[in-house]
Image (cartoon, rainbow over the protein chains, first blue to last red):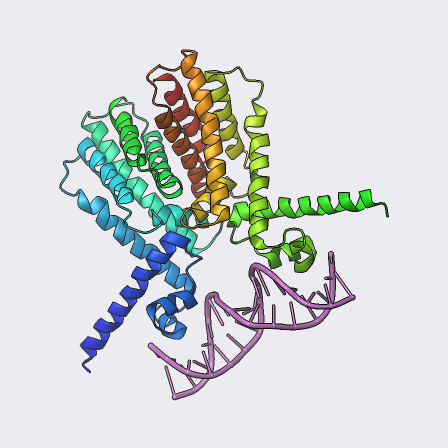
Length: 200
Length: 200
DNA sequence: CCTACCGATCGGTAGG
DNA sequence: CCTACCGATCGGTAGG
């Protein structure tokens, strides 16, 4: 009956909704996430569920944030101890490959799926997704620039070109894992990254 | 009143439906393609429209075929005259980049969008999409093998690795064009392909 | 190809 | 958090 318990319960319910939403959205898309289905699978009413978010769009935005938190924890969060420069860049990419290889989320990378789903639309969800993508590219760019300034990558390295190619390798990894269930894909991703970081 | 005219009209109507379906599906996904919306935009009834296909799944399968025809015409169909081996491989990839650059379909590559949308599901649509992807990779593989046998690529070239990287470059091109409207992306794709086909 | 209709489900609200 | 409900839309069918 204490207010503290109620608040904790509310937050816990909200988290339960978000966790399940993220699982559904990763596998079937952010639009395939319907209030009715979500409520049934969580054993609650649509009204009770919507009370936490107001509208479906607000729920979708919260799911985007939740996905970002998971990615942050599983990829950059795992390599904080890696030495600055090229080792850190390599470690981040390896954590990214491992994240996709371990299939942390059903249906692979939530952001790949959601970005492809929303890139032709407009609105707050699309903008939030574009923002997250920009944020991680910015992170990558920082590591690349440090590697250059440490002399670990050539001084004339085209930073954005390198990032373009890293993104391609990750998109291909997701593609071959999800569509082809190709278990050799992680090794191909690692080989391609290695070529990118050493041959240059 | 002649039966010939009726058959021609029927086929023309069917083609009109498919063309518009492909445009919608490219921009908003194969599931976002709804019978009601399609009928309204084409100025016909849902029943009249469904009469051509029977079910939505059959329509979706026909749209996949239509997309394959467009791709076939716009990419491999444009480079039939290119000399066998590495020149042909390069020409196919250039036609592919150009196809995405010219935005032949609204919303970019239909197959990238549809594949990402359906890769977590099961059924005939998913299977058809996987089949098309496999078919084009097979085509690419043939050109790579020829280039190797002609001595235009190193004898120890890892064919599937090369194709993995080409797919990544194309997926990244679609990503940067659609999400970021990044007009430098085609040049990045060409540079990456060039490195792939010469440095090795 | 049409009108007229079906049950199911959508996102969301009123009121408690 | 619930029940009970709203109008709109979904894929699809009957009958012509």
